[in-house]
Length: 337
Image (cartoon, rainbow, N blue to C red; front, side, top):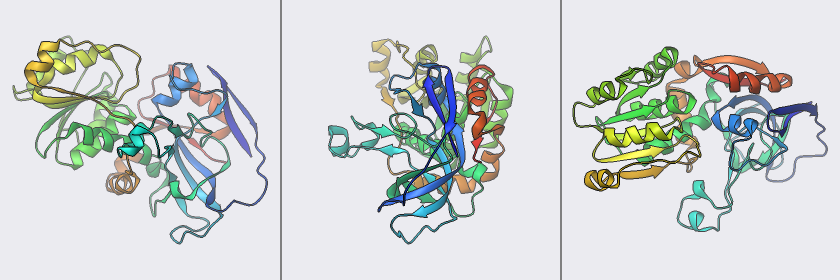
């Protein structure tokens, strides 16, 4: 048994892992089956994440097999495939008291603040374990990203038939696209990669455009039927794209930032006031795993098809380096032993 430990920016070490003792009451022992690599993982690996705490076992998009159960919960059994909710809010801070545990002041996320899923086995609180039934491991690994998509769509507050622009068709952008499309929202996905645009279309994007086009702003505006988009979700973290997005928003529209960046968003105040825009952040999710599992089941084939690169747990150092430098088209996943 092994664990991949990010010891310093740019350096992951694969070390022996020893597991001792029985599983405590209220806990479940998980044998890792899949872990997805996402943008926040790469920020930690590259040393650019504002909340990184190294050394750390990364990995928060987790699929596993139940190996042992400390307390019988009734709905899971040894051998079941499950997904893990990685969020551990404090329950007492102002955000938690207001029903927003996703924005908890002392939020502990597996793979970020506490050790995550890039290890052969680990114990987790039973409350965070969700059975995923017949879903394949390659589909189930998208459950956590889809919860992020659910929260972003919630923040956008659109009705069926209204138009949304999604900036970026990476893992999170595609999750936002899939969730919005299943809610009847008309999605335009923008990304420089033609392959990623094809993946976004397979997940429900009505139209796509190339962010590298010289007249891309006019192209996006045409997709909005002259009114502008009622929501723009920026999954890239690019502040310059955020400024463009504000200009593309319709009267009463909403800008949702979900991509991580330390860049400064700049927008004319008179535009924000004149359009009465809403500027919203979107972080994590709130109780979204059951809904996400339902969505993943509905588009399981399309999601699984976006897996482009696979590495074993012993090859996590190579996987992180590859994902950081080679700009993979689809999803990079780590498979268990």
